[in-house]
Length: 235
Image (cartoon, rainbow, N blue to C red):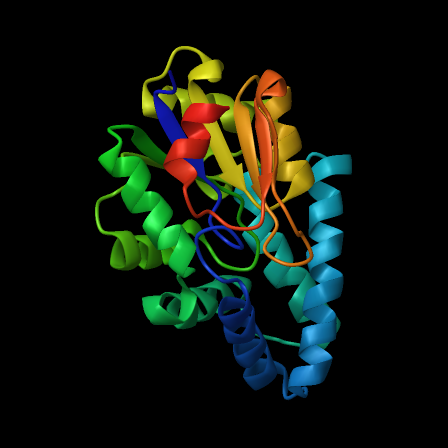
């Protein structure tokens, strides 16, 4: 029997697009560059920082600072990096939950909570800090989550086993086999969870026709989070 379910945030519980556009707005105003130029820089820095996390072991606490520094360098911003981060946090955290929450994720959180399982969050951080994400999750889901862990707080990013171990400690679960992690990233969420001994659900909202459930391997790939509570029991 599972004891807990953990969720990735962006692309799983909340839509990433509006938050990324908030980043574009801030850097466009700071640099005087067009939104198109800023979007291109954001895509490049996104890839570069993710690669640094994997290849160079970039500390989870430094990812937000490094992404802001690199964007400022690419776009010619002269603002203090801490001021930039504060500005991005402010704009992202002011987004309305109804703009961000996937309908299926809202129902999934409610179903899993009603099933009596503990709920957690395990999220990486990049262009804004966990402060902004926490505000949004609290506004959207209230007190549904008993524990939330973010890379800029715990110092480790998914798919690192250390990130998942921090999650288990926070949830108070002794065995990783008692936790199902739900996310949208094949490497960070699916691969990271399975390599750390957890079970996993990968949600692929576009381009996936039918779902796939591999009970013996403790994983599922699904096009939505509808019926998540039953799926968690199944795998």
